[in-house]
Length: 265
Image 1 (cartoon, rainbow, N blue to C red):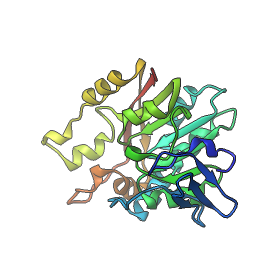
Image 2: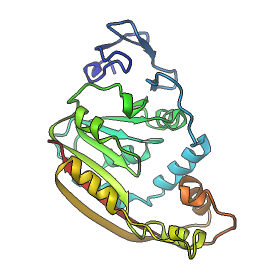
Image 3: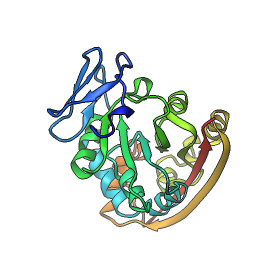
Image 4: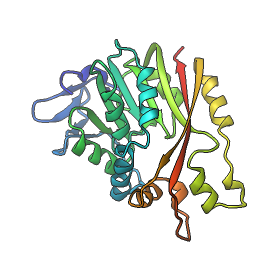
């Protein structure tokens, strides 16, 4: 963080920040944040309640590291040029997607993850020490304008105005959104014969196209076998599994996602 302190601005007053040897991060107006002993920074001005538990992020890490999303991560890495220097993963959770995407890259960019959930960022800092992890709110982010070459937004809410502010000119946003058959086996058993059994991402895609130029849309669909041990962890990490009132049994799962790639104006 000392080496890259020029990326950061105070979320309170927007002044420049200095990273000191003792782990204090102080702006010109003396607003102060600390690097926690676990290796992350909490830039939240006020605490935000999170519906995501430590156990959810542990399940999410297990599922992602099982290889379930490997084709998605590889496709995202293919969109990141070798000269990319700074990557920000927004809504990064426990950091597994960002870490695995970076393993596909020839060069090692500066990778930063931000999430409003302290539990997620604590897990990210624990498992992936070679990146910068921040607890923060995109509505009041701790980054200067035109700081990033790539913003990732994987199955997470977005703040397009903030994305455009902190992206360099002509840089990219890569957003992953569900397609109609994503986790369809869970949806069919959990919401049979209800409107939730079907899903369309048309509104999300159109909104993305309103904010970025030269938008590409790449659909990736495949089925993966699902072990008996992995199913409960998958159900814990996805909202689809939170409302089940009965046990379900699955032997495979469908991954069906759109990767949206847009350029900043």
